Image (cartoon, rainbow, N blue to C red; front, side):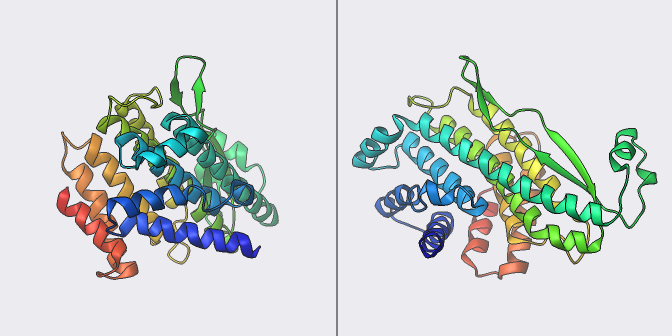
Length: 307
């Protein structure tokens, strides 16, 4: 337990430095590689937070490899382990998919226990019939999106998500409180998966000449990122309750920031407001939650200025 806690703390520190610190190129490159091994996968396998951080670090390092931000000796070390950046990106997607699945299971387990104790009956039939008025007001409808692991379709090299599965649960006020933490982790994991797709798109756009990329175009990967972020926002918005809301959290604010980056890089030509709104909302949340001078707030403000 102590070894895992120390590894998780190191991963969090490296993630924060990568996100907000103004590092020189050599230090940044060294910490990118270190972050991919900060948590041994054997220790991370049963921890949602550890897998999410490991997936983010792996994707970030793979992007740096593609765009040439790593030192030559680092690239050689990574090549011995992964062969190329494609291998790293595929592994990052797999890690994120595992994290999403673990988080979803935690939500479902609590929701099923809570819905059972509330005496809810025939909820699925009500939902399937579209008769939402038949659900009592004290019940709460939770949509948990279960994402299948991203996979390569045959030999075509085309990557994409599996079909979405929607499950519904009705719980009381106490159930909402019990679900808040697992739902927050679930939404954060889906947002991290979306960020991985964004890094694939960004790397492909910056260096289309580099070999070893997943065989998917930058716009296709950006579309995947956008859709996956929208899935995450459904989870963040599922607790419509002032006491339990997930839309007043740092995790939601960070997801808005990354979503704004996707829109800014790939979708803002026709509508400038499409990128300005999520970034402005993220900035306001960061200021409210962390203060105007926090490094995370400053990083979002910089993005807003560039946008």
